[in-house]
Length: 184
Image 1 (tube, rainbow, N blue to C red):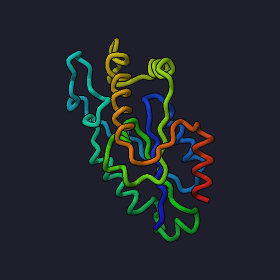
Image 2 (cartoon, rainbow, N blue to C red):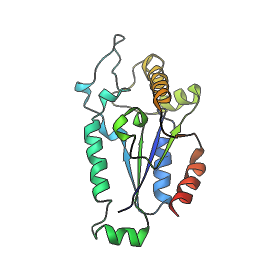
Image 3 (cartoon, rainbow, N blue to C red):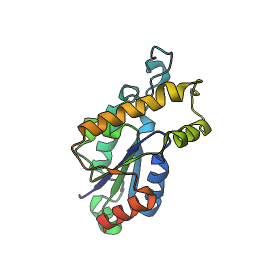
Image 4 (spheres, one colour):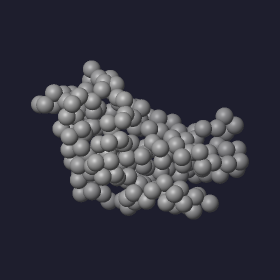
C-alpha cells in the first residue's frame, strides 16, 4: 500500500505539534506520531556539569520504541477494514512525525516523502518556553544554559549532514498547500 510520510522538525516550542495537529484535521486519513511521547523516565536522563537534566539529546528519547511505532503504522496505516478499503475510501494514508530531533536520527532519513524544519527567533522561543508547564519544571537558567545551546548544536549537526531537501519554515498554510498538492 502506498503511504506518505511527512517529517516536521525544528526548535522547541516552534509550532511543530500545532502544525501537525492542524494538518491532521485537514488531511484525510492522517495520523501523527510525536517524538515527545518517547522521552525516557527522568531517572534515566543524564545530568550535565551545570546540574541540568539532558532532555535535549537523542539519548533522552527511546528512539527504538518510536521506530517500532512508525513500523507498526507503516504495516497497517490505521484501518480495521484492511488496507485496500482504507486507500480506496480515503486516499493515500498520511503519517506526520513531529519532533525536535527527527533530522538528527539517521534511521529516519529514508522514510520522508516531505520534511520541514520550523524555526522561531530566540526571543520568541524563550517567551513560548516560559509559558509552558514541564514536568519536571525548567530550573532557572535552563533555557539559556541548556535548551537553546543544544538546539543550536543539533541544528548545526543537522545542516552539516543533510543529504535530503528539508523545507525551512514555510508556515502552516505553505506546508498544507505543499502536502495537498503532492497527495491529490
